[in-house]
Amino acid sequence: MPSAAPELALTPLLEADGISFSYGRQQVLQSVALAVRPGEFVALVGPNGSGKSTLLRILLGSLQPSTGSVKLLGSPPDHLRERGRLGYVPQRPALSPDVPATVEELVSAGRLARRGWWRPFRGEDRRAVRHAMESVDLAELAARPLAELSGGQQQRAFIARAFASEPELLVLDEPIAGIDAESQRRFRDSLVHLIDDHGSGVLLVSHELSAVSADIDRVVVLKRRVLFDGPPAELEREGVSLGIHPDDLPLWLEGLG
Amino acid sequence: MTVAIGLPYPFELAFMQRALAAGIVVGVFAPLIGTFLVQKRMALIGDGIGHLAFAGVGAGVVAGVYPVWSALGFAVAGALGVEWLRARRRASGDLALALFFYSGIALGVVLLSRGGGLDASVVGFLFGQPLTVDPGELGLIAALGVGIGVAVLTLRRVLFAVVTDEEWSRVAGLPVGALNNLLAILTAAAVVAAMQVVGILLIAALMVLPVATGQLLGRSFGGTLRWAVVLGVGSVVGGLAASRLWGLAPGGAVVLIAAGAFLLVALAKRSLPGSVRLEVTEP
Image 1 (cartoon, one colour):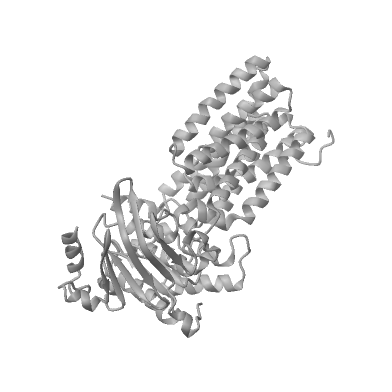
Image 2 (spheres, rainbow over the protein chains, first blue to last red):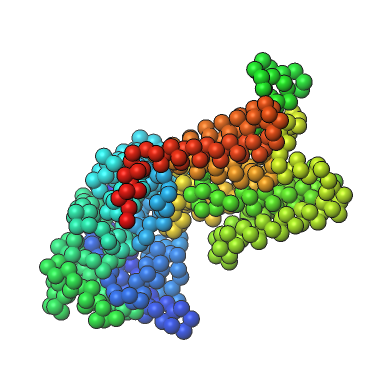
């Protein structure tokens, strides 16, 4: 788990500056800046087509920006060697329902980036996998095939896969779309556990923030460029509530689009 | 090797024992690789590579090279080509396979006709001739089998991660391209090693059918892998025994037993109370 010295704790885990990107002549991102620090919970929101997915791909190193720079855990994303320090939960997990994997097998895969994919598992790896499953309340379903879980339970299994590498920075792409309220509550608890107990930073890309509205430190609103970057309380002055009226944010974002 | 060890009928003769040994090795490694290919939704790649191996056999006949080596060269090159096309999305998985599939078998026929080898001996490569496996060929099959088995078992966790979720694996820093290429090379080696036992046209069946049945029986990826290997070995042993008992083509008998096992398990699962309940509740 991260244990940064006080002076290092302010160093952002993720820092993007002046990011621009175009698909042909169409500019998708314009001078975007974004930072996530240790122990910070940042939400990235924006209407459809606002450039969120493109920005995420740039931040994770799978796309090069036209201009600007990104530092992911202190390195350019494509030069980051210790990938286990980064946890990632993709938008639509690619796992087919036919895959006969159990929760434990999926979560164990998350440990590969921290352990080194060529090294055999040891006791500490099995403990980390167990802890990751416990932190999303799935330890009792460890041997259950994923296909037999509800959508919310499956999503928590993918989050546990990211937790298994004990990430210093967790990036989640629309992780709670379409899951039930109870699963959203457990999802919120697991993120708070990662931030409070392990000091990790979280970047959550989502339209649906009501489950975590009380825990978010900063909201970044993107529509090609950053329209807003500040605490949720400031956003409420615009008449946008993240928690009490869960429809406010999606409706407001739709208006932006 | 004419001296046989003491096994009962139908495996009491030395040639049947060599066929049995080669078949068991293939029965282990074909489903072992196939489990990862099925998860990657490339179940038919074994078939496509088999066709390329046929072109390699033709090239070997023309060039005067031992056909197994030329088949291995063609199969490895083709497997890497299919993976290259798939990874760069230059062609969809099935289109990429079809390109190699048809070109391979056409090239094989043309080369064999050119080299004067388009005769009855080709049937052995197409449908397998395990009963004629000699000690040298058995050694080659065993060596390839051990190599494939060690590679797959050592890398099973990371191969599982890559074949089930490439996007996540890339972000996690796993060597996705190298592992996909390694899986392609192992598949090519498996096709060529199994060519003698079940034949080029049937090898893909032994990579896929035991896995399909294993998915019905296993409640985990590891369980599927184990069931697939048990079913692969069982199909080979049963198929060879049937071929001796009733004078059947051994490659075909092996594959029909693997297909029959799938049918039986699928029907048995349908008749279970849980399965019926699921069907009733579906709209």
